[in-house]
Image (cartoon, rainbow, N blue to C red; front, side, top):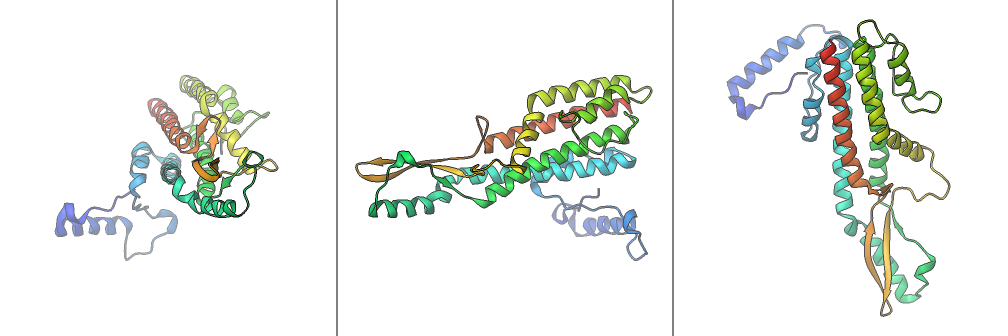
Length: 276
C-alpha cells in the first residue's frame, strides 16, 4: 500500500518528488499487467485505524492480500457502526413525521393505545445493520484464511464455515487435526483464542446475522419502536427505542463488536507473526 502524500505537509517540490517516485514504482508510461500493479489506497478518515490494525506491508505472499482485504472490511465496519450510532442519536427527529401523522389522526378519531404497537422505519438503519452483520462474518472469513497462507494448517481454509452446526467448526477442527509440523504451539494458542471469542460474542453475532438473512414471519425488521401515551386527551410522544440485539441497543452493540473484532484480530495476527 502506498499512501498519497500531503501536499501541504511536504510542500510542492517534496510532493511532486514523492508522486514521481510513485509513478516510477507503478511503471507509469509502460505496459503494466493489471495483476502486478501496486494498489494505491486513498484511505477514508474512518479507515485509518483499520490500516493500523491490519497493515498489509507487514506481510508477505498471499497473506499480504488477505490482510489488505481485512483492512478494507474493518474500515467498512467502522463506518457502518459510526453511521448507526449517528442515526440512533437522531431517532427523535427521524420519527417525528410518523408521530405528527398519528397525532393528527388522533385528534380526529382517538383509539385504544394498549391494543397497538408502533414502529418507525428508517431504511438506512436497516441496510447498515444488515451490512454490519454481513461484514463481521466476512472479516472472520478473511481472518482465518491466514491460517492457511501462513502454513499453520495443512488444509486450505476459505472461511469461518460451520461443521455439524458449530459456527467455525471447520476452522476449529483443522487447528486440532490438520496442523502443520512445527506449528503445534501456535495452532493450540489460536484454537483456544477462537473458542474463547466464539463463546463470548462470535456465535451470537453469526446467529443474529442468520436471523436477519432468514427472518421469521411478522418480525419487525430493525425499526425504532415509537413510544406513545395518552395524557389529558392528547397523544404524547414519549421516545423512540432503537433496535436491540438481546439487551443491548444496536448502536452500542455494533461499537462493542468493533472492539471485540479488533482484539481477536490483533492477538491472532501477533501469534502468527511470532511463529513466522
